[in-house]
Length: 142
Image 1 (cartoon, one colour):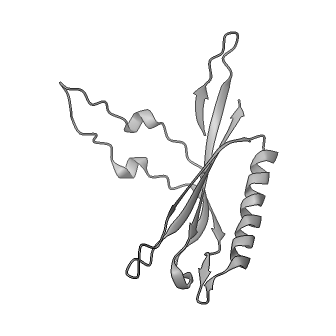
Image 2: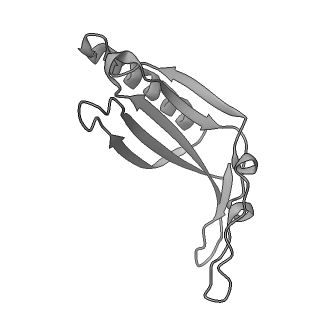
């Protein structure tokens, strides 16, 4: 979990932030992969950050292998499509699994602060790729 300080006039409580991501495939014929992903390994963004200035525009030399997280929780979801087309039962099943994960997070004392969604959909007959991604951003006081 990443810790952030929130400043107020009288106190400075500390919070931790946790991001949970759901990726749901919108690839035709059920060929994609859909998951809920939750990291189990902390990272400090400062270790992978460089500042660019007019005098020093040295490229950021962070190594991908150092950024990569190997300890994470992966929950299987169903794809939006199967061989017959869009599968509404799969969407309902994903809603139930995602709701279960969110409920567990709330029970652990997390507050859902923000939700952000995006889609990359099929761009024509030769594309055949697409995902629906949602990030659930939680916070809780330390």
